[in-house]
Amino acid sequence: MSMRYATSLLGLCLAIGTAGLLSPAVAQQWVMPRTPDGHPDLQGNWSNATLTPLQRGRNQEGPVLTAGEVARLEGRAEDRYIVDAQPSDPDRPPPEAGITIVGYNQVFYNRGDLIAVINGEARSSIITNPSNGRRPPLTPEAQELQQERRAFRRQFGQSDHPELRTLTDRCLMFGPNVGPPMLPNSRYNNNYTIVQTANYVMINAEVIHDTRIIQLGEPDPLPAHIRPWMGDSWGHWEGDVLVVETTNFHPMQEFNGIPAAEDLKVTERFNRIDEETILYEFTIDDPETYTEPWSGELPFAKFHDYLYEFACHEGNYSMAAMLTGARFEESQADQNRR
Image 1 (cartoon, one colour):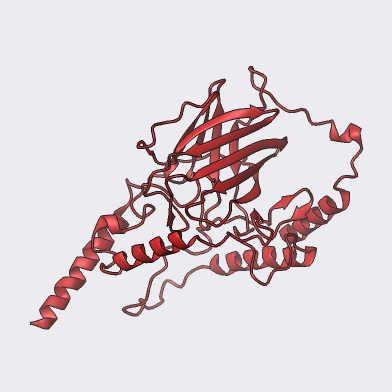
Image 2 (tube, helix red, strand yellow):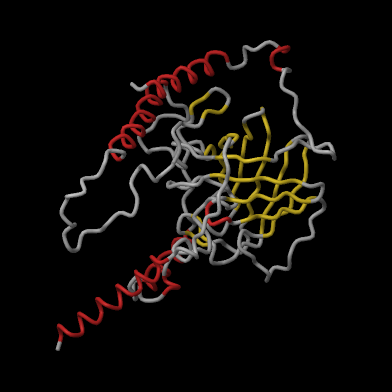
Protein backbone atom coordinates (compact mmCIF):
# COMPACT_ATOMS: atom_id res chain seq x y z
CA MET A 1 0.00 0.00 0.00
CA SER A 2 1.36 3.43 -0.93
CA MET A 3 2.06 6.08 1.69
CA ARG A 4 -0.70 8.32 0.26
CA TYR A 5 -3.39 5.67 0.68
CA ALA A 6 -2.06 4.47 3.99
CA THR A 7 -2.43 8.05 5.19
CA SER A 8 -5.95 8.22 3.74
CA LEU A 9 -6.96 5.03 5.51
CA LEU A 10 -5.47 6.23 8.78
CA GLY A 11 -7.41 9.46 8.44
CA LEU A 12 -10.64 7.56 7.86
CA CYS A 13 -10.05 5.37 10.91
CA LEU A 14 -9.37 8.42 13.05
CA ALA A 15 -12.48 10.16 11.70
CA ILE A 16 -14.63 7.14 12.51
CA GLY A 17 -13.02 6.60 15.89
CA THR A 18 -13.31 10.19 17.06
CA ALA A 19 -16.65 11.22 15.53
CA GLY A 20 -18.82 12.67 18.24
CA LEU A 21 -16.05 12.42 20.89
CA LEU A 22 -14.59 15.91 20.61
CA SER A 23 -15.06 18.14 23.60
CA PRO A 24 -17.28 21.23 23.24
CA ALA A 25 -14.21 23.45 23.59
CA VAL A 26 -12.47 21.76 20.67
CA ALA A 27 -15.65 21.72 18.57
CA GLN A 28 -16.05 25.48 19.08
CA GLN A 29 -12.55 26.40 17.92
CA TRP A 30 -13.69 26.90 14.32
CA VAL A 31 -15.72 30.06 13.80
CA MET A 32 -18.04 30.30 10.80
CA PRO A 33 -16.76 32.99 8.42
CA ARG A 34 -19.49 35.43 7.48
CA THR A 35 -20.15 37.97 4.76
CA PRO A 36 -20.85 41.65 5.63
CA ASP A 37 -24.60 40.89 5.61
CA GLY A 38 -24.09 38.24 8.31
CA HIS A 39 -24.63 35.03 6.33
CA PRO A 40 -22.14 32.15 6.15
CA ASP A 41 -19.35 32.84 3.66
CA LEU A 42 -19.40 30.09 1.03
CA GLN A 43 -17.04 31.91 -1.29
CA GLY A 44 -13.91 30.42 -2.75
CA ASN A 45 -12.87 27.46 -4.86
CA TRP A 46 -14.32 24.03 -4.12
CA SER A 47 -14.19 20.50 -5.54
CA ASN A 48 -16.64 17.60 -5.35
CA ALA A 49 -14.34 15.05 -7.01
CA THR A 50 -14.78 11.67 -5.34
CA LEU A 51 -14.49 7.95 -5.96
CA THR A 52 -17.92 7.47 -4.38
CA PRO A 53 -20.41 6.61 -7.14
CA LEU A 54 -23.82 8.18 -7.56
CA GLN A 55 -25.57 4.84 -7.04
CA ARG A 56 -24.65 2.06 -4.64
CA GLY A 57 -23.50 -1.17 -6.24
CA ARG A 58 -26.20 -3.83 -6.32
CA ASN A 59 -23.97 -6.19 -4.35
CA GLN A 60 -22.89 -3.58 -1.82
CA GLU A 61 -24.41 -4.03 1.62
CA GLY A 62 -25.40 -0.84 3.37
CA PRO A 63 -24.53 2.84 3.00
CA VAL A 64 -21.17 2.69 4.84
CA LEU A 65 -17.96 1.09 3.57
CA THR A 66 -15.53 -0.69 5.84
CA ALA A 67 -11.94 0.49 6.21
CA GLY A 68 -10.86 -2.51 4.13
CA GLU A 69 -13.26 -1.63 1.32
CA VAL A 70 -12.03 1.96 1.33
CA ALA A 71 -8.40 0.82 1.10
CA ARG A 72 -9.23 -1.51 -1.79
CA LEU A 73 -11.15 1.10 -3.81
CA GLU A 74 -8.67 3.92 -3.26
CA GLY A 75 -5.71 1.62 -3.87
CA ARG A 76 -7.22 0.36 -7.11
CA ALA A 77 -7.66 3.94 -8.31
CA GLU A 78 -4.03 4.72 -7.57
CA ASP A 79 -2.87 1.54 -9.31
CA ARG A 80 -4.72 2.55 -12.49
CA TYR A 81 -3.02 5.92 -12.41
CA ILE A 82 0.44 4.40 -11.90
CA VAL A 83 -0.01 2.01 -14.84
CA ASP A 84 -1.17 4.73 -17.21
CA ALA A 85 1.58 7.10 -16.05
CA GLN A 86 4.24 4.82 -17.52
CA PRO A 87 6.04 6.29 -20.57
CA SER A 88 4.55 5.33 -23.93
CA ASP A 89 6.65 3.41 -26.44
CA PRO A 90 7.48 5.86 -29.24
CA ASP A 91 8.19 2.93 -31.58
CA ARG A 92 4.86 1.20 -31.08
CA PRO A 93 2.94 0.36 -34.28
CA PRO A 94 -0.20 2.28 -35.27
CA PRO A 95 -3.53 0.91 -34.01
CA GLU A 96 -5.41 -1.51 -36.20
CA ALA A 97 -8.15 -0.12 -38.42
CA GLY A 98 -11.59 -0.16 -36.81
CA ILE A 99 -10.34 -0.06 -33.22
CA THR A 100 -11.87 2.66 -31.07
CA ILE A 101 -9.19 5.06 -29.88
CA VAL A 102 -9.64 6.39 -26.35
CA GLY A 103 -8.85 10.11 -26.13
CA TYR A 104 -7.49 10.10 -22.57
CA ASN A 105 -5.95 7.77 -20.04
CA GLN A 106 -5.89 7.91 -16.25
CA VAL A 107 -3.18 10.59 -16.24
CA PHE A 108 -5.61 13.05 -17.83
CA TYR A 109 -8.63 11.98 -15.81
CA ASN A 110 -9.17 13.37 -12.32
CA ARG A 111 -12.16 11.56 -10.88
CA GLY A 112 -10.87 12.07 -7.35
CA ASP A 113 -8.59 10.02 -5.15
CA LEU A 114 -10.75 9.38 -2.10
CA ILE A 115 -14.07 7.96 -0.98
CA ALA A 116 -16.47 10.60 0.36
CA VAL A 117 -16.61 10.67 4.18
CA ILE A 118 -19.59 12.31 5.91
CA ASN A 119 -20.04 12.30 9.69
CA GLY A 120 -17.11 9.90 9.96
CA GLU A 121 -18.75 7.42 7.56
CA ALA A 122 -17.19 6.34 4.28
CA ARG A 123 -20.15 6.41 1.93
CA SER A 124 -20.90 3.71 -0.64
CA SER A 125 -23.06 6.03 -2.74
CA ILE A 126 -23.96 9.68 -3.12
CA ILE A 127 -27.67 8.78 -3.10
CA THR A 128 -29.04 8.47 0.43
CA ASN A 129 -32.75 8.13 -0.30
CA PRO A 130 -34.16 5.63 -1.28
CA SER A 131 -32.37 3.62 1.38
CA ASN A 132 -30.91 1.21 -1.20
CA GLY A 133 -28.75 4.05 -2.50
CA ARG A 134 -30.13 3.82 -6.02
CA ARG A 135 -32.40 5.98 -8.14
CA PRO A 136 -36.07 4.98 -7.94
CA PRO A 137 -37.67 3.31 -10.96
CA LEU A 138 -39.00 5.37 -13.83
CA THR A 139 -42.75 5.84 -14.09
CA PRO A 140 -44.51 3.93 -16.91
CA GLU A 141 -44.93 7.21 -18.79
CA ALA A 142 -41.22 7.99 -18.52
CA GLN A 143 -40.29 4.50 -19.67
CA GLU A 144 -42.53 4.86 -22.72
CA LEU A 145 -41.06 8.27 -23.52
CA GLN A 146 -37.54 6.89 -23.22
CA GLN A 147 -38.35 4.04 -25.61
CA GLU A 148 -39.80 6.51 -28.12
CA ARG A 149 -36.67 8.67 -27.97
CA ARG A 150 -34.42 5.66 -28.49
CA ALA A 151 -36.51 4.45 -31.42
CA PHE A 152 -36.34 7.89 -33.02
CA ARG A 153 -32.56 8.14 -32.63
CA ARG A 154 -32.04 4.65 -34.06
CA GLN A 155 -33.12 6.05 -37.43
CA PHE A 156 -29.88 8.01 -37.60
CA GLY A 157 -26.18 7.50 -37.19
CA GLN A 158 -24.65 9.33 -34.25
CA SER A 159 -22.67 11.56 -36.63
CA ASP A 160 -25.40 12.24 -39.18
CA HIS A 161 -25.89 15.78 -37.87
CA PRO A 162 -24.27 17.92 -35.17
CA GLU A 163 -27.52 18.17 -33.22
CA LEU A 164 -27.55 14.39 -32.84
CA ARG A 165 -24.37 14.64 -30.78
CA THR A 166 -24.61 15.12 -27.02
CA LEU A 167 -24.70 18.51 -25.35
CA THR A 168 -21.20 17.76 -24.07
CA ASP A 169 -19.88 17.03 -27.58
CA ARG A 170 -21.39 20.33 -28.70
CA CYS A 171 -19.86 22.25 -25.76
CA LEU A 172 -23.28 23.40 -24.56
CA MET A 173 -23.31 21.70 -21.16
CA PHE A 174 -21.05 19.15 -19.55
CA GLY A 175 -22.80 16.27 -17.86
CA PRO A 176 -23.95 16.73 -14.29
CA ASN A 177 -21.38 19.23 -13.03
CA VAL A 178 -23.28 22.50 -13.03
CA GLY A 179 -26.65 20.77 -12.63
CA PRO A 180 -28.54 21.23 -10.59
CA PRO A 181 -27.95 18.95 -8.85
CA MET A 182 -24.21 19.61 -8.98
CA LEU A 183 -22.62 16.18 -9.15
CA PRO A 184 -19.11 15.07 -10.10
CA ASN A 185 -18.55 13.71 -13.58
CA SER A 186 -16.42 10.62 -14.05
CA ARG A 187 -13.69 12.46 -15.94
CA TYR A 188 -12.10 15.69 -14.79
CA ASN A 189 -12.41 19.35 -13.72
CA ASN A 190 -14.89 18.79 -10.89
CA ASN A 191 -14.12 22.25 -9.52
CA TYR A 192 -16.22 25.32 -8.75
CA THR A 193 -15.93 28.96 -7.75
CA ILE A 194 -18.61 30.48 -5.51
CA VAL A 195 -19.11 34.25 -5.22
CA GLN A 196 -21.72 35.86 -2.95
CA THR A 197 -23.43 39.21 -2.57
CA ALA A 198 -26.38 40.10 -0.38
CA ASN A 199 -28.78 39.37 -3.25
CA TYR A 200 -27.05 36.78 -5.44
CA VAL A 201 -24.90 33.67 -5.36
CA MET A 202 -22.82 32.86 -8.44
CA ILE A 203 -21.49 29.34 -8.99
CA ASN A 204 -19.03 28.86 -11.83
CA ALA A 205 -18.22 25.28 -12.86
CA GLU A 206 -14.74 24.88 -14.30
CA VAL A 207 -15.83 22.40 -16.93
CA ILE A 208 -17.16 24.36 -19.97
CA HIS A 209 -17.26 27.33 -17.51
CA ASP A 210 -21.05 27.03 -17.08
CA THR A 211 -22.27 29.60 -14.56
CA ARG A 212 -25.34 29.60 -12.36
CA ILE A 213 -26.81 32.89 -11.11
CA ILE A 214 -28.95 32.23 -8.03
CA GLN A 215 -31.20 35.07 -6.87
CA LEU A 216 -31.87 35.38 -3.15
CA GLY A 217 -35.10 36.47 -1.52
CA GLU A 218 -38.79 36.00 -2.20
CA PRO A 219 -39.08 33.98 -5.44
CA ASP A 220 -40.41 35.66 -8.55
CA PRO A 221 -40.21 32.67 -10.89
CA LEU A 222 -40.02 32.86 -14.64
CA PRO A 223 -43.15 32.17 -16.70
CA ALA A 224 -43.64 28.49 -17.43
CA HIS A 225 -42.66 28.83 -21.09
CA ILE A 226 -39.24 30.37 -20.33
CA ARG A 227 -36.85 27.51 -19.60
CA PRO A 228 -33.15 28.40 -19.54
CA TRP A 229 -30.20 26.03 -19.27
CA MET A 230 -29.73 25.13 -15.58
CA GLY A 231 -33.27 26.25 -14.83
CA ASP A 232 -34.52 29.16 -12.76
CA SER A 233 -32.91 29.15 -9.29
CA TRP A 234 -34.02 31.04 -6.19
CA GLY A 235 -32.31 30.83 -2.82
CA HIS A 236 -33.00 31.70 0.79
CA TRP A 237 -31.30 31.15 4.13
CA GLU A 238 -32.62 28.72 6.72
CA GLY A 239 -30.39 29.61 9.64
CA ASP A 240 -26.86 29.08 8.35
CA VAL A 241 -27.90 26.82 5.46
CA LEU A 242 -28.41 28.18 1.94
CA VAL A 243 -31.45 26.50 0.38
CA VAL A 244 -31.87 26.77 -3.39
CA GLU A 245 -34.96 25.68 -5.33
CA THR A 246 -34.76 25.33 -9.11
CA THR A 247 -37.55 24.86 -11.66
CA ASN A 248 -38.15 25.69 -15.35
CA PHE A 249 -35.40 23.47 -16.73
CA HIS A 250 -34.57 23.56 -20.43
CA PRO A 251 -36.33 20.57 -22.07
CA MET A 252 -33.06 19.49 -23.73
CA GLN A 253 -31.16 19.38 -20.44
CA GLU A 254 -30.66 15.75 -19.48
CA PHE A 255 -29.67 13.89 -16.35
CA ASN A 256 -28.10 10.51 -17.08
CA GLY A 257 -29.80 10.47 -20.48
CA ILE A 258 -33.23 11.42 -19.12
CA PRO A 259 -34.59 14.83 -20.25
CA ALA A 260 -35.93 17.28 -17.70
CA ALA A 261 -39.69 17.01 -17.20
CA GLU A 262 -41.87 20.09 -17.18
CA ASP A 263 -42.50 19.97 -13.42
CA LEU A 264 -39.01 18.93 -12.33
CA LYS A 265 -37.93 20.63 -9.10
CA VAL A 266 -34.48 20.35 -7.54
CA THR A 267 -33.85 21.51 -3.97
CA GLU A 268 -30.27 22.02 -2.80
CA ARG A 269 -28.78 22.75 0.62
CA PHE A 270 -25.32 24.28 1.09
CA ASN A 271 -24.08 23.91 4.66
CA ARG A 272 -20.54 25.00 5.50
CA ILE A 273 -19.56 22.61 8.28
CA ASP A 274 -15.89 23.57 8.72
CA GLU A 275 -13.08 25.58 7.17
CA GLU A 276 -12.46 22.98 4.45
CA THR A 277 -15.92 21.57 3.73
CA ILE A 278 -19.37 22.44 2.43
CA LEU A 279 -21.90 19.66 2.92
CA TYR A 280 -24.00 19.63 -0.25
CA GLU A 281 -27.43 17.97 -0.20
CA PHE A 282 -30.01 17.71 -2.95
CA THR A 283 -33.49 16.34 -3.58
CA ILE A 284 -35.00 15.65 -7.01
CA ASP A 285 -38.78 15.83 -7.15
CA ASP A 286 -39.98 14.76 -10.60
CA PRO A 287 -43.28 12.85 -10.40
CA GLU A 288 -43.51 12.61 -14.19
CA THR A 289 -40.22 10.73 -14.38
CA TYR A 290 -39.61 8.90 -11.08
CA THR A 291 -41.93 6.88 -8.86
CA GLU A 292 -40.74 8.84 -5.82
CA PRO A 293 -38.44 11.76 -4.95
CA TRP A 294 -34.80 10.91 -4.35
CA SER A 295 -31.95 12.59 -2.50
CA GLY A 296 -28.23 12.54 -1.94
CA GLU A 297 -25.32 14.30 -0.29
CA LEU A 298 -21.58 14.72 -0.73
CA PRO A 299 -18.84 16.99 0.56
CA PHE A 300 -17.42 19.89 -1.41
CA ALA A 301 -13.78 20.18 -0.32
CA LYS A 302 -11.82 23.43 -0.34
CA PHE A 303 -9.82 23.53 -3.58
CA HIS A 304 -6.45 25.13 -2.93
CA ASP A 305 -5.65 25.89 -6.54
CA TYR A 306 -6.81 27.98 -9.47
CA LEU A 307 -9.67 27.30 -11.85
CA TYR A 308 -8.80 27.68 -15.51
CA GLU A 309 -10.73 28.55 -18.63
CA PHE A 310 -12.23 25.44 -20.19
CA ALA A 311 -11.90 26.43 -23.85
CA CYS A 312 -14.30 23.86 -25.25
CA HIS A 313 -15.63 25.52 -28.41
CA GLU A 314 -12.30 27.11 -29.24
CA GLY A 315 -10.55 23.75 -29.39
CA ASN A 316 -13.45 21.54 -30.36
CA TYR A 317 -11.96 20.22 -33.59
CA SER A 318 -13.18 16.75 -32.61
CA MET A 319 -16.72 17.70 -33.61
CA ALA A 320 -15.67 18.68 -37.12
CA ALA A 321 -13.42 15.62 -37.33
CA MET A 322 -16.22 13.23 -36.33
CA LEU A 323 -18.67 14.69 -38.82
CA THR A 324 -16.04 14.82 -41.58
CA GLY A 325 -15.03 11.23 -40.90
CA ALA A 326 -18.65 10.11 -41.11
CA ARG A 327 -19.10 11.88 -44.46
CA PHE A 328 -15.90 10.21 -45.75
CA GLU A 329 -17.15 6.78 -44.72
CA GLU A 330 -20.43 7.47 -46.53
CA SER A 331 -18.59 8.49 -49.71
CA GLN A 332 -16.44 5.35 -49.52
CA ALA A 333 -19.55 3.22 -49.12
CA ASP A 334 -21.12 4.92 -52.16
CA GLN A 335 -18.05 4.20 -54.26
CA ASN A 336 -18.00 0.57 -53.18
CA ARG A 337 -21.63 0.13 -54.26
CA ARG A 338 -20.88 1.35 -57.79
